[in-house]
Every structure is written in C-alpha cells, then in structure tokens.
Amino acid sequence: MAPYLPALALSAARGLFSLACLATSAYAFAYLFMAVRGGDPFAARFAISGLDVPAHFFGAGLALLLVPLQLSGGIRRRWPALHRLGGWLSAAAILVGGVSGLSLAQHAQGGWPSRLGFSLLSLLWLGVTANGIRLAVAGRFDRHRRWMAYSMALTAGAVTLRVMLALGTGVLGWPFMPVYAGTAWASWLFNLAVCAWLLRRPRPAPRGNAGSRWASARPAA
Image 1 (tube, rainbow, N blue to C red):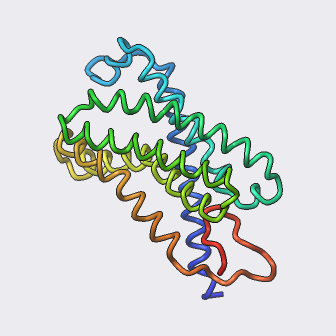
Image 2: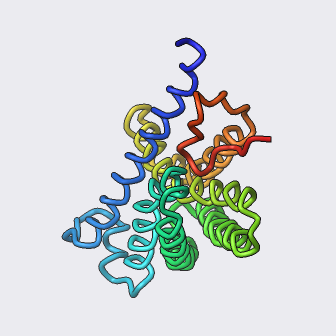
Image 3: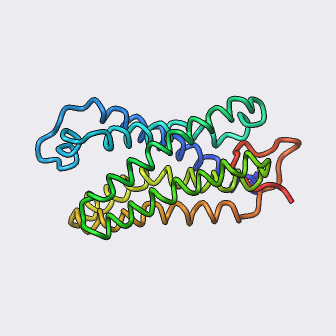
C-alpha cells in the first residue's frame, strides 16, 4: 500500500484544490449581489465602477467554477464534447476576466508594484490560455493539456491571493499594503512554480488499466 501513498496524497490535494476553486467562485458570484460595505475601498470602487469590476468577478468566477470540470481526465475521455464545451466557456470567461482584470490592475491598491503584478497576471492569463486553445485546434493535445494546466494555475491565483492575504494580515499580523503588494506577484508565481513541478514529476505507475483521472497529468512516454 505504501507505494500508492504519494498518488493518494496528490489526489487529495487535487480534491482540495477543486473545492477551493469552487468556494472562491461562489464568493465571486455572491460579491456581485452584496450590499456596499463602508470602509472597504474595493467595495466603494465596485459601487461607482462601470463594467470592469462586475465583469472581472463574473469572468474569473466562471473560470474558477469550470476548473474541476476541465481538470478531470475522466470527463475528457468519456464525454469529450462536454470537455470541449467547458473549454470554450472557460476561454470566454478568461477573456472577460483577463481584459477587465487588466483594467482594474491600473488602479490597484499598493502603487506600481501591485499594478505591475496584476497587469502581468492578466496578460499571462490571456496569452497562456490563447496558446492552449491554439494547440488544441492544431491537434497537439499533449502540449494543449500542459498549457491549460498553467492557465488553470493562473486562474487559481484568486484562491492563492486570498490564502496569502489571510496568512499575512490575519495570522502573522503584517500591515495590509505590503502584504497586498507582495501577493500581487506571489499568488500567481507560486502557482506557476507548483504547476511546473507537478508536470515534471514522474507519474506513479497506474494500477491495472486505470489511467490518470486528471487532464493535466504528464503523458506517458
């Protein structure tokens, strides 16, 4: 049983990752209908904004909601049409979330470090996803899955951002602005590093004829 422990731990981590994406997605959609809270500068901007804030929350929320669907290799193999539909919906959501996120980044709290970090995140999110779609259309599915794994890592920056903010300001008690400026970079750089490590690690030997359940798993040689 011991040889399977790393695979079980990885499956558990993927399950927690999917749950975190769903929870953050639910928060994003709920935020669209929340009453304006006094003393919250982001809520104040939301109240007077045009389309950038609601568009970002809707696009990013939908992209997060679709992460578990697109991550599942079982769905990709059994219901490829559903996987393709989820992919196009995810691409549309990222287009909306990325363009509106780029607009929001120009007014981010924390000055130019935050603005630059969020701007690069938005541009990478759009570019990586577009290249993943290009590879799928070209039939290069192994490379498509790898690029879309990086796209999902960037999508999940919204999850990591909130975890890091909670740890920095809540657990460690650090001032908000320095933590926020740092997480504008660390939230997505950390995710990309973890994704790169997962894609490069050796695959555990499958039991029987069962393949990987996850679409982003490294293809067998």
